[in-house]
Amino acid sequence: PLEILTVPCLSDNYAFMAHDAESGETALIDVPEAAPILAVLKERNWNLSHVLLTHHHADHVQGLGAILAAHPAKVIGAAADAHRLPPLDIAVAEGDTVQVGSDVGHVLDVSGHTVGHIAFHFPDSNAVFTADSLMALGCGRLFEGTAEQMWTSLGKLAALPTDTVVYSGHEYTQANGAFAVTVDPDNPDLAARILDIDDARTRSEPTVPSLLSLELATNPFLRATDAGVQENVGMSGADPVAVFTEIRARKDRF
Image (cartoon, rainbow, N blue to C red; front, side):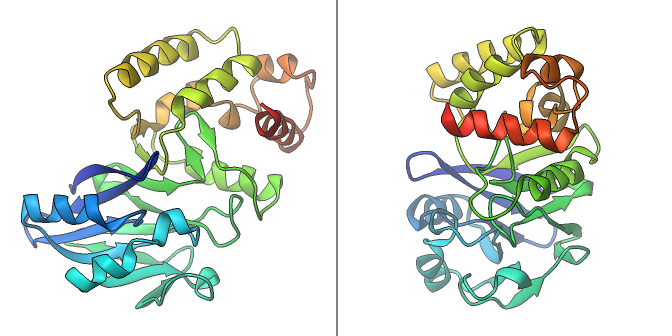
């Protein structure tokens, strides 16, 4: 499996590096800023071979120029987003694959936060890089896509093996937890997770990545089919897309 590092960037972003020891190839997932990424590459003496871009927002791509100046690498991103991403060497869509060393990543269309947002799932490494689609205890705000699109995207991610590790794009988990208890107040797994999150943040430790099994048990945006959550938002028996829409609207106002 790939060795994966979490690299804090900006005030609350994360980039990730996935390194294959046998081949020496290293993939960078998203580029919020160059300096901390360059520092890790130098410290590890890793050569960058791939840059995987999840979506076009500046806080995920703006460090790319400086990275490529120091480490020429193949830039891979969504064909559907190519018109507003930095220049791509390889344009991909759902069903395509990306190879890093001997590990093969599968491209998923996870539109919702943006249209053309993609995720990269590396099953042999039990890893999925979701950026601002599925997040730790949350999901991205719907800037471009519809609630139905995001619910479909989250469904694809929720269907992955439960031991998959979710590498998402931001340190929003503590705030997400404060919201989650308003729609899922009787969830003991959520209560325990919030205590763990608070403890980690007290020590300035990242709460990303997270296990998919934990997201399924505690993330309100994955729990629109849960009877308790539906009851708490006054929508018992409602269509899950409608329940998800209500939860997302409440988070937007929170």
